[in-house]
Image 1 (cartoon, helix red, strand yellow):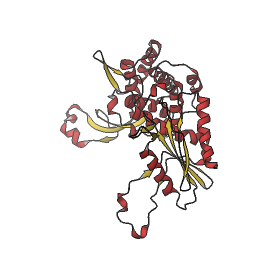
Image 2 (image 1 turned 135 degrees about the vertical axis):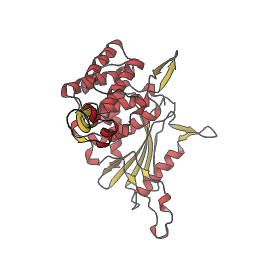
Image 3 (image 1 turned 90 degrees about the vertical axis):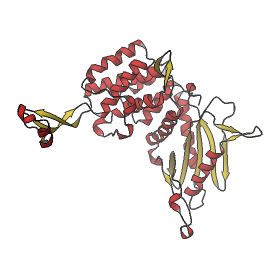
Length: 350
């Protein structure tokens, strides 16, 4: 993907939607700034976000600790007390809960801040601002960024403000792949295709959730419409899960988000067509979702636009169902990009 063509500001807007922080404080100020480098954008989000979080109070949680104490606290660990002969020194090994900021959420924040300081292409002023955050995280353990279990980080009302911050951190660790430059490890200047693909899908879902909640946007599962009377080995059928499904009245639109280096394929004789595998997959989703064969389900392949001379522009009716392929130009100003997203909603009306 020629993703360096994506406006940096739009990367931020996509993250703000994807991590449900579009209405957070400071978003307008960040969105209005100009960034020459993606590392600077990520650094600015962390500087502002962590700074605000410090004022509110860092996320804390009850963490289990074990220590030899002169007085009883929590539960006495009799086995360890005997094994370490702590009673000889007038102590007991106790297990207890401590309300501390050394949580996995803060460990991830600190580790990625240090990663950006050491290996990121960040301007001097923002690098200094990142360093000034570290004393507030002194009680937090520094861990290897590659050891962070992103899927284990949960969010609730008390730590919802961490969602965007840790989304940025995950994008840095998973998306800004390391490279060797003159013997020193650096972060690449852009985000990997896999990471951007995931962000692209999540952004689309959250955009429609924010602006069109009545359409029940979500990544829905499509059931196979098979004949149960003579079915055999149905457990071997692969799951069909859409990237985005919108529903309006009796109609539904299945959107399959694609973030590729090439949004078209070239056949043996030089003919340029939509990716056949993508089109077959989408058609399978649509036909199985349209169980009443009413043509009430449509499908759209939505590619992130590349710089290739030919782009998908398909709109046909196949066996009663509308099927299409088009691009979303992530390099255009946000107002234009939003207009493209709104145009897609009209598919539910046709």
